[in-house]
Length: 110
Image 1 (tube, rainbow, N blue to C red):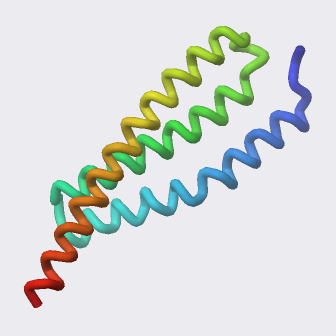
Image 2: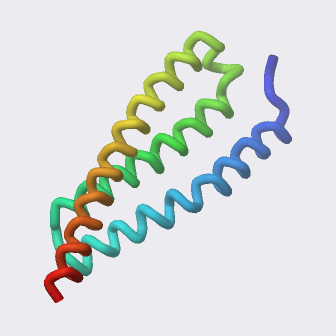
């Protein structure tokens, strides 16, 4: 069963809308690296956010082409993408934890 043009446009539009917050987070993480330098927490935050953004976009692309991929291939694709998304989330959380720890330490000392 082929998807009509309206379904494809709907998937792409919803994908763009849901990816905006992830894109903003990735941009803010890159901004943090530019301002602070290559610190561990910045690298982890940026890497995690970019991986999550790419996984979100890949999810939309996969959903758009489900009729071409077939259900079996699509399920494998989703498992693969979800694994990478989990990795991105873990990296982001570790970076966020390090940033909070660093901020608390700074405010306690001053």
